[in-house]
Length: 118
Image (cartoon, rainbow, N blue to C red; front, side, top):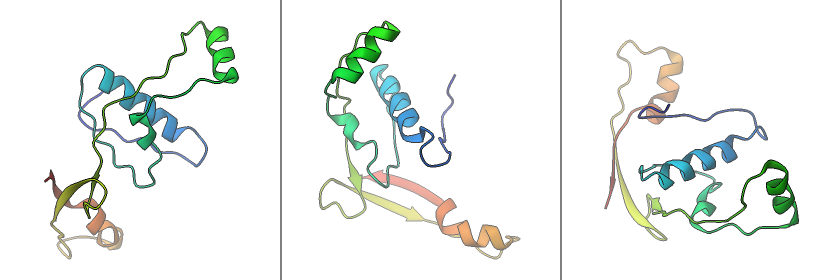
């Protein structure tokens, strides 16, 4: 069961990206819109159909799955808009109102209030 928001986190190399990619692909396939904040462009490839290889075909036979690559619909957004749709961000930073040192440091990261494609 999924609710409105999700977070996939873990150490490097533990399958975070693959987990996020699989969840996004399955939700998209079910008609659910998905927003991914992909800073390193790790999952941008879901917009192209994957190509099979001998290892993938062997694994598909072992598990009984049918191996087929498919593309998911994607729209890329950026703050600059140079290579994708322009994204406007409104930031509201609240500091000093009962915030401890940690909250002061993460304030700019945790207080985005509006994302809007333009």
